[in-house]
Image (cartoon, rainbow, N blue to C red; front, side, top):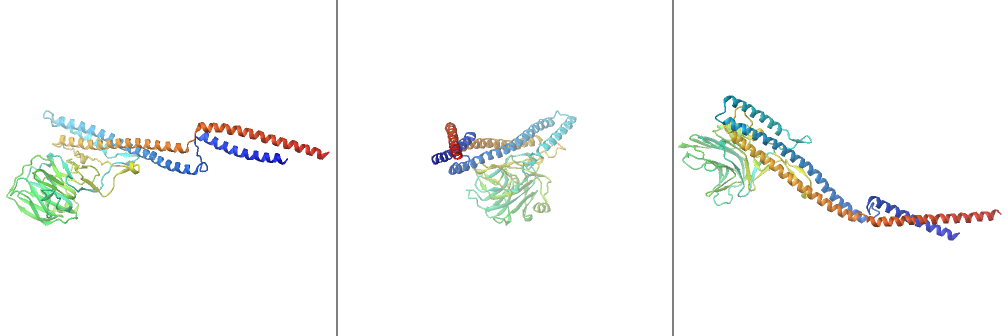
Length: 479
């Protein structure tokens, strides 16, 4: 009896081990994983969980980047529509300006231009994704220039050609130094149109103004000086045979000229750097709120502009640098937009970027709001004489935004593809650690099932033998 009891105990223990092994093998067979809990392989599970966390981050980044791609596609599609409508407007404008177009036809064309203007405004004024606006209205920025070659170039246009005896130039500057270190750096250029007109700060901090055709020739310079490291608004006014310089809205100097003659020569405008064979005048610091008028502002108007009550009468160019972009938008309505070159940047007080992804795969994306004012077509109650020129610049402006959207889409596609590849690599590593050898599992499962069947039979045989022995003993006892 004791021998059978010992065998029975051993069989129960064997059955317990076989059952647990069978359970583990069945779980591995169903899940395909060798590790299904911390009990299976604590160290292996810890490593696989860390790898899984990294893999999930790549997959999440891809999902987030897909939202960014949708936004870029919305922008690209919207501005493609706008570009098509601007092309239609240009075709109409060319016809409008034709000498063979009748007055009645011109009236019809003007109405068609206004209709297209309204359609464009509807397209660009409400660009959203998931009910959230995706273009930036303003970042309250300023132009930052820090090294030689930093400049904003503005293409020449009829609105920037000052063919009169009066002009006003103004800007807010904050200089780090008066000497940029270049060979011919007697002054730093704020804004100028090569050989035509200039607003500068000389190497000792005096404000300088120049207008071609005035006599005697050369710069007129202020008595007062600007202070390094401080925001200072400087203004220069030419009014016939009188020139004036203002600092922070207050009259600093007045000059009487012998001649006020003026003949604008075609040239691009530059902001922050004059670079030619004779001069290399680089500004070191920031520039903001640049304005050009084709008339002389009064003392009161200069003061009001400084206070923020800006007059827009005869405003030909205005660059506020309130867009986080590589374009300096002209908000005068004449669309004299500029291109940032070198290391010139717009220094923003707020971050307008939409952020997608994380870590090295993070993508900062932003799109500036285009308005009718920036496109130069805000008022078509009368068709401007330079309408075709404006539309050409508007098309260029829209093209820049479309190109930016396309670049973002390409970047997102690359990063999403890279994320997928990295996620697959991590998944493969996880599978190598966690995954079970299914051929081996299948074989071991078959063996375990046979072992369990055998043990079960043996247990039953022992139970039957013990029962028979017990019945025999009871029979003997009863007799």
